[in-house]
Length: 302
Image (cartoon, rainbow, N blue to C red; front, side, top):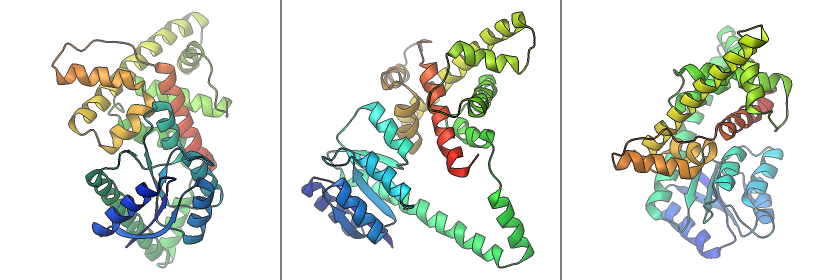
């Protein structure tokens, strides 16, 4: 049975969430708090499997609370619940580590659906851990499994699943994106990124030597990446049209794109309009991809 913690400065929301969890028999609520600081202490003490947390709270917001909990070693899953629709704030919440974002006012059906998905993820994770423990006990095979588990993943191994989720792993520009992220991880190691022209030329230098060829190849890199990011936008918009609450759509749409561009693309698809090329925010896409890979690689000591 899953154990839940609820952190929300609205007492009514806390009661509603607890009733939904208990009535649907999704688990038990083991701690509840009305502020970020109070919630931090309660979660560290009770160690719930899942935390439902409000984004905006007066003393310590949800993102800060999540980051502080991670610093203290808490490894549970997070579901953000808030009235905020600001795409940048939602994007920061996903980067902080939330699994899902639920919009207030609270909808029972949506909460039940999201928590059911979280429960399934937790069940799978526990099963995998049990399998690993069983293999470890088998001696040599277990030692080999542990060694493989300790191997640090390369940047490419972090990037590929993200590109696959957005349906662009087979696009020609996906290789350029991967090379640019590898370049940034190798030479920058901070949150900022150079101009797009510099990044395109950095990718071009991996295949060309002479300056004239680099400039020409840099323009080709730009075109390939633009087509690839446009394809990602179309794919994510298509997912949103089919299922607005799809986890991939909820994660990638506000994080990697300007949400008005996603809405426009969805409208074109829904109304059968001619799909315009339109503008895509390439720099935002690359910066978010870089930050997501940088965050994961730092956690693994890449």
